[in-house]
Amino acid sequence: MIIPYGYLKDISGEIRIDEEKAKTVRLIYNLYLEGLSLNRIAAYLFNEKFVSPSGKSRWTVQTIDNLISNEKYIYMITPELYAKAQLEKQKRTNKSADNKRKTVRYNSNDVLSGLLVCGECGKNYRRITRKDGKIVWRCADRVENGKQAVCQNNHFILECQAKRIICDYFEIDQFDASTVKDSVERIEISANEIVIIPKSEQCFGIAL
Ligand SMILES: [Zn+2]
Figure 1 (cartoon, rainbow, N blue to C red):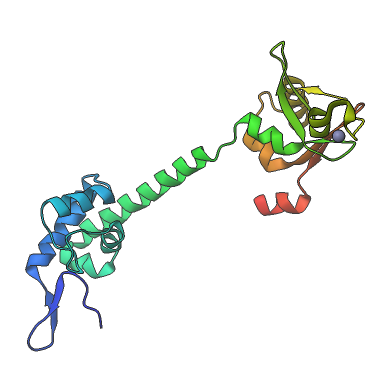
Figure 2: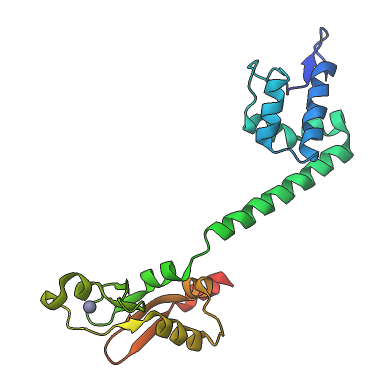
């Protein structure tokens, strides 16, 4: 049996609190509740020369993280302090999930580049900034090969026009990249029509 950090087996074989290390456990919980990150706690313990549970001079973030959520410390530190630490941990987890969500938000350029496809040849439409500063999308085959292109679809679409059509389709006032990415499979463009193909009903079912 592995004895958790802060406990020891005495001569009679009983497990009891190692008062010296228990102080370190309390310190770690308190630092955590003061708002220090796991990294900063690790740095603090290193600077103050607290030896890690495995006898090393550096504590890993993982060790500290495990220690903070180990129920074996409930009565070593007090149930109140333990409960507070769990709440704090939950709060930090939610916060980092929020941050992640923000970083994966699509900007509108990215979202259209996977979605607009040529209705004639099936190649992606490509984003081009014209000399007059207007942004247009055209079949990649036409962009790359010009008059030698196999694809005969010479139709380009203004980015603002594409966005307006998408907004009309979803009955929204402002173009929202996340909505589009979540709901549209692809948008086929040809000379005389634009076809919006939504993700399958099954996908919507899962999302709800
Ligand atoms: Zn094409």
